[in-house]
Image 1 (cartoon, one colour):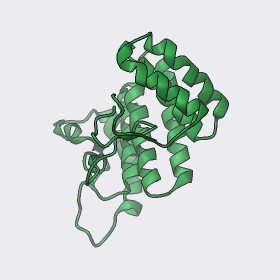
Image 2: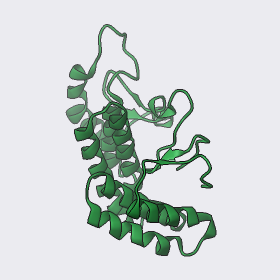
Image 3: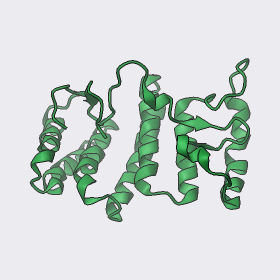
Image 4: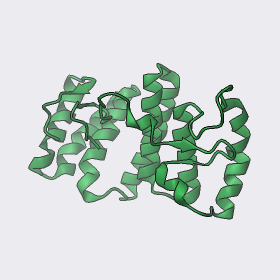
Length: 206
């Protein structure tokens, strides 16, 4: 999850140098509302049931999201709504709970940028819902359990659920199972439980 040489926030959002790619990789069709990453638009035909869901639940919203006088573009709605639409579509398609949670988390990051704490909290809670279900159903791969145990704890902390946050932070050491490459997660969980910060420094080996 952390890939930028500029570090990340403590909810594991990479800090990009220059334009944030998060705003460039999500697209919404201005005609029907189909939304997804680049690869999602390579499909030649959508499942009829999925098309019906989009027509009934997303297409009617487009009128209020367009921003004239710009010509129709794939990017025309608030980015958090685009990520939310993608999450809805992922749910209708039966995508993994983990991937849907990731989309809601990105929606929360967008709201953090636009200084909209109410929506940010809503999307963080949605992300938590899907991540916790994914953990409960053992959908998360063994190599990522430690990351998501930490992330769930940090998301709980950021929405003010301190008790739940501490419970998940305490699970990180067990989840990483002594993997030295993930020791940074254990240390980060301890930090966020005892002396929370908003950013991870550039020198973090992750």
